Length: 344
Image 1 (spheres, rainbow, N blue to C red):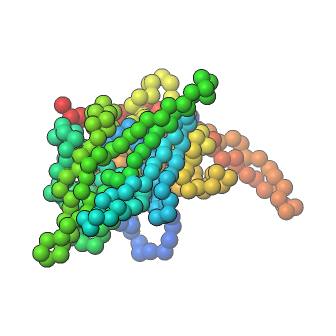
Image 2: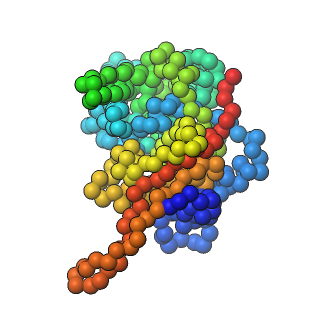
Image 3: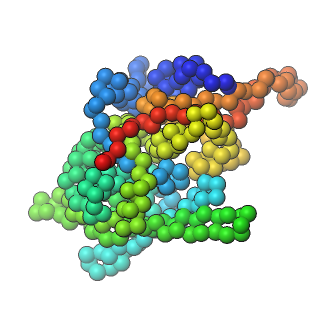
């Protein structure tokens, strides 16, 4: 459709939150996720200074880690975005009893949140050496709203273990020049991810993580600032977190007089892991639900859906049926980033 005011675009977040989620039988009123989105959006309007900043490397704002558990037997995982291909490989870690233990691949929203927090600590302290025990415990309580002594915290610890042991390769192909480059992206080079226990048998955080110098230096140049309350409100969905990070990195770089069109096929290629490319309608529906949740928080984002063609008449099982062709994609317009404040 032609560009309209946010309230008329069909993607207006606050007006569409309640209708964006699947309809199931429940008690009247917003769900916990809807309430969290509404409360966070309202808090940002009423208290715009009460914000902290998380960071994501621009690489992970364009190509993404697995949404779901690939399985313990899957040791390598690929994801492509145009000419860029991300290959994630599971690693091994030395166990305190002397064994080498195979650690599965990271996945889901919690591994993304842990990585954002690690990035935050490295940039704030301007050091690749990160003392994480106290800060990560506080982060889990503040952002995930989990009790650091509760059972759910084990899932966060497991994603930290998986993230620390995995290795990443980025392949960039140039078919027109018949070349391809491979870049190593080791995030962590030294770690202790075997959580010791105190005399009361309470599992503790590891004491430190050492980022690779290459990753740390690249992060200093290519970190994308993200609003922590926004991230917390979207922490239920890896897809929503990835869309938010992508828009935070992408929208402010679009020329003001030259909007960028992105087809649904391209969006599926970038975000559609796990969705059958032959059933793109399923992906489009899931993406639009997550996008509305993101736009409920990132309210300066300007995105419109392309104008649908006129309905056409078809004959199905001997009956006349009017069908409206699906929209072809989204148009991204120059927008302010969700948070402007950067580390000095």
